[in-house]
Amino acid sequence: MRVQKCGTYNPDATQNIDVNKVTESTLLALDRLLVYLAEHKADVLDDFITGLTSKYRSEVPNGFDNFTSFKLSNIKASLKMLTDIPGLTEACTDLCLTLLSVPEGYAWKPQELELLQIDDVSARLIPRYYQAKLLTELMAREEAIILLKNFYDFSVATYRTVERHESITSLYEDEVKRGAEREGFIWISALLNEGKFAGRTDICLVNEALKGFNDPELAYVIACHADFVVIQKMNKNFLLTRSSTLMDGPFCESCVHDTRVVSKIEHPPREFFEKLDQNL
Image 1 (cartoon, helix red, strand yellow):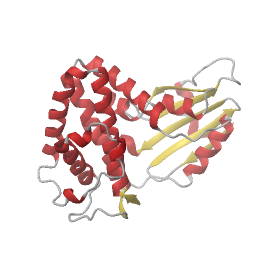
Image 2: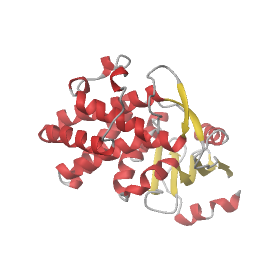
Image 3: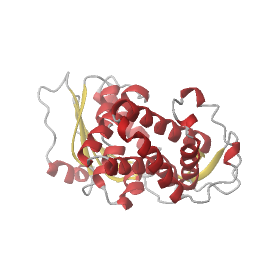
Image 4: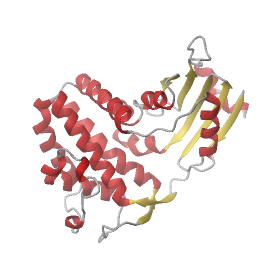
C-alpha cells in the first residue's frame, strides 16, 4: 500500500483570482438552476426568483455603485433566463463581489486580484446554499433535496469538464501531485492496489466556507453529492463509495474502485481511515 499526506492549510492563504470569471460562473450556475426549475418544478419558479432576489439583496443592501459597467457579453449567449431578470442578476453579482471581499470601486476589466482562497470558495458556494435553503422553504424539504441532487448530477454530467484517468494508479498519482500545489486542503491518499484508492480529508475549504450555516445535509448536497458523477466522468469503470464527510463527522472518507479490477465493491471500515495516518 502506498500512502501519502497531501496539501497544506493556511486560513489566510491568498491566490490570484479572476473576479469576472468567478462572477460569470456564479451567474451561469444560477441560470441553469432556473431553467431546471422551469422544466421540473415550474410552480415554485416565480416565488423562487422573488425570494432569492430578496435574500441576496438583504445580504448586500447597498450593492456596488459600478454594477452597470459589468458586461454579460462573455456569457450572454449561454444565459437563457437571467438576462430577463435584471434585479436577480444584479443582486447575485453584488453578493458574489461581497463574498470575494472585492474592494469598493472595482473596475470591471480583465485582471486578477490577490484575494483570500476561502473567499473564492465562499463566493462560489454561499449563493448556491441560499438557493438550496430557499427551495426547502418553498416545497417539502425531502422533495427539495431530491430535486437538488438531480440538478447537481445533471449539471456535472452536462457542463463540467473532468480530467480523465485510465487507471486508479493514475488518479492516485495525480492526487499526490496536486497535494504539493494546493493550500486549503489536507488529506491522506492511499493506493491499496491497482483497483482501489482511498482517501481521508481532514481539512477542506468547502467545509470551512459552509459550516457556519449549521445545515450539514444541505452543505453536502450542494458541494459534495455530485462527486459520484465526477468520478464516473473520469472513467466509466470507476465507482465512488463514501460513508461520511466533514459536513457530519471528524473527516471525509472516500474510496474509488475500478470495477475492471476488483471483483467486489467493499468500502474500507471506519477503523482503516482512523488509522490511515499511522501508515505514513
